[in-house]
Structure formats: structure tokens, C-alpha cells
Amino acid sequence: MRYVRFLRYFFIPCVALAACTATNGAGTSTTADAVAAGNSCVAPTGVGTAHSGDITQDAVWRAADGPHTITSNMTIKHGATLTLEPCAAVRIRPGVSLSAEGTLIAIGEEARPIAITADDPAQPFAFLTILSGGFGDLAWVNVSHGAGETIGGSGVIDVWGPGSNTSAPLELNARLRHVHIDGSEQYGLTLERGGGLTADSDDLTISGAKLGAISTRPRLAGTIPAGQYTGNTLDVIQVIADEVMTTDTTWHDRGVPYRVGQPNGNGHDFRIGDTAKNAPRTVWTLDPGVVISVAAAGGVTLQSSGFGQPNAGVLIANGTAAKPIVFSSAAATPAAGDWRGLVWTGVSDPADRLEYVHVAYAGGASGANSFHCSPKGGGAYSANEDAAIALFAQPANAFIQNCTFENSGGDGIDLAYSGSALDFRTSNTFTQIVGCNVTTPRAADGACAGAIVCP
Image (cartoon, rainbow, N blue to C red; front, side, top):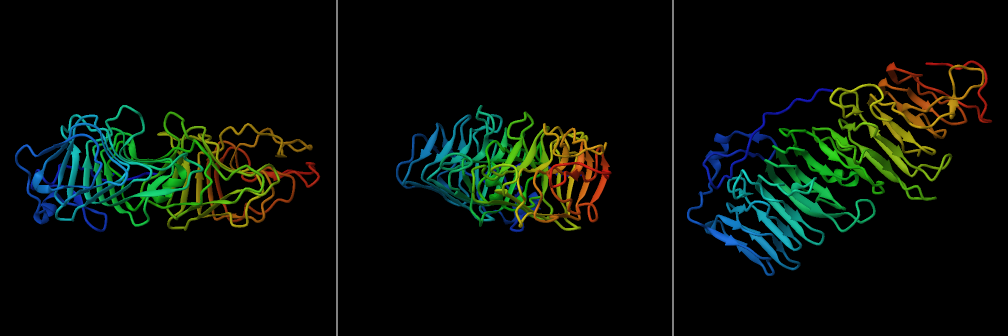
């Protein structure tokens, strides 16, 4: 699928120049001249105010006292609040960070934005971090030339939760509205360890990021607000799926693909649902239009406690004819079998649904065999279970309908169980499938007898 790259634009702090780039309330970019006409900020003069050391009590940084220069790592301590006035200009020295254990309030106005940038644009600051227990409330703020920290995977703005990426409660500890992040050495925004954005976050713009717009964990991806995430080296939401997702999550169409797995292969094995016996259900919901690209050899697994057991992982992917949901390869030049596909290890949940879903370039090596009947006949079992979709237990219903399967390196839909063959052929479309469109399951007694239909 082809994506149109929007015109890349760069941010220059509005307090310094008369013309700047910003976003309007609808989330679309406005021209520099149009913004300049309504920008009432006055460029600061003089040396401004230098800041060092932690903030231990409430403080207000006034626009008239700017520019405010942070000269060494600074933390807003628990119980303290730092407030930035509209039009405030904040400059941060190279490699220096601003962290909030307490509260950061930076509420600008459309005509009076706040600017947080590197003191020297050629030498980026480290990051602006909202830590667990803290809170960041940013509106009409432009943040630029950050993520210069040498540790990989940092964002210009980092949001951190209380603990591990899988089990700790979500902590929605940042509110971003009409925020523009530009010029990142790594990512624009990172969401880590259960830290996410509030539901009323909106109109986030990220451009000029060298590794991608956003880096997130699977269960935090649902907190990403509407906005613009193009004009980066990679226009993707990078999902690092290195731990099991056990929190119900909805991924929304944000205009760019969700990429599961980093280019180096980290976090490409996306697993949904706990494998403990009688584990609670974890529901993963995809909105129409969502595009998911999976890194090489990666896959998506809906887990259960074992074969034949109810699945704890549930997938609801209801696309439409006009806005299908897409699973595809993350490769620059995709090929059949690039990634493993979608796998249900146990009995699908009655809520599972795939409607108008397009699955392409899957069917990579699964490492499993002998679960369905071989098309060779003669009672032979399968040589492998490589498929775009593999079902290792008879599903409750034929929950995959009006879907398209293309360029699978194995089968299309693999009925890898002993039981009845449900109708997955009639409404689905199969194109360039190496194996069978839909495989034939073993009989209930485990035998393979009679003629085997393929495709």
C-alpha cells in the first residue's frame, strides 16, 4: 500500500521570529504567513534567565523574563509545579533534560504559543520527561531539536508509567493538546512502562523525527491522539511488542502504519492474552482504516493456556469496504512469507471478528506441522502450518468474512485442528497463495481420509 508523504516543514520558535509554522484546532497545518498574522508573541531581548538545580517549590516562568535557559539536568520534584506562561521561551543546553516528578503546566494560546527548544539547534537537548507520579499538561506548545540522549529509543517527549510494560496499571500522566514536536534525533514521542496520554489529548503534530514519529508499547498505542505524524524519516508508529499484552486496547486510525517490531528485530513477536489457566480475556480492537506492518519473521498470536482451551486473546477487527484494516510486511520491498501471520492457539472467542481485513505477505515459517491434512492425500498430515492465519482449535463460528489474503508464503487460512471445516472460502478472496487457500482439518478422530480439496 502506498502512503502519501506530506510536505515536511520545520519549526522555528514563534517567540523569536514573526513567521512560524503551527497547527490549527482541526489538526491541519497552517501557512507561516497565516500564523504570523495572528501571533502576538514578542521576541525576548537580553540574556534572559538561567536555571539550574531541581525545582522543589511552585515556580512560574514569565514570558517577559525569557528566554529561560536550562543549563543542567532539572527535575520538578514531587509536590512542586512549574508553570510556563503563554509566549514563554525555554531553551535547553545540549544533552540536558527536564523531568517532571511533580507537575509541568505549559498552557499557551493559539496566538501566544510556548516554545521549548535547544539552546543551539545544532546540538539537541536530551528530552522532556513526564515520570510516574508526575503530570504534564501542555497546550499550544512547540517543542523542537531534542532526543539527543545517547540511549537509543528516546523521544523529544518521554512519558513514563509506574513499572513494567505489561502488568502495571496504566498511568495517563500527560495531556498534549495542539502540541508540535519537530526535529528529533530519535522519536518525537515515546510511551513507556504504562505511561500514556489522557483521553482528551488532541491535535498532536510530529515531524522531522529520524527514527519515527512515535515509539510505544502495544497497550499504550490506544492512547495516541488524533494528529499528524508525517514528514519524518519513517512515518510510522513504532510498536515494541516484547511483552504480552494483557490490557484491553483499541488502536485508532492515525493516518500512518503501526509498525510491530523495530528494524533490528526487537519487539516483533506480538502476543495478546495471558497463558495462565482461566486467564481473563484481553480484547484487542482495531478501528477501520488501521494499517499494521510487521517486521521480518514477526507475528501476531492470540494466546490461550493450551491447545483446545479457550483463547484469552481476542481480536475484533471490523473494517469496511471503504476503509479495510490491513496487516502487511514492514519490508521496503515486501515478499511472500516476510512475516508469520495471525495465530489463534486455542478456541476463538465468540467476540472474535475479522471483517474487511486485508492480510498480505504473511505465511512465514511457523515451526509447526502435522495439524491438518496434507493435500497429497493418502492419510498424510501437513508438512507445516505456515499460513496467513492459523487456527489451532475449531472456532466457535466462521468469524473471518469478506477478507482478502494476498501473497502468502504458505496457506491462506489454516484449519490446524481436528474437527469440522467451517466455511471460510465463500466470502473471502485469495490471491497468489503458495499453498491452499483454506486447508482441510483432520476429522474429529484425528484421521485424514478421502480426497483433500486444495484450494
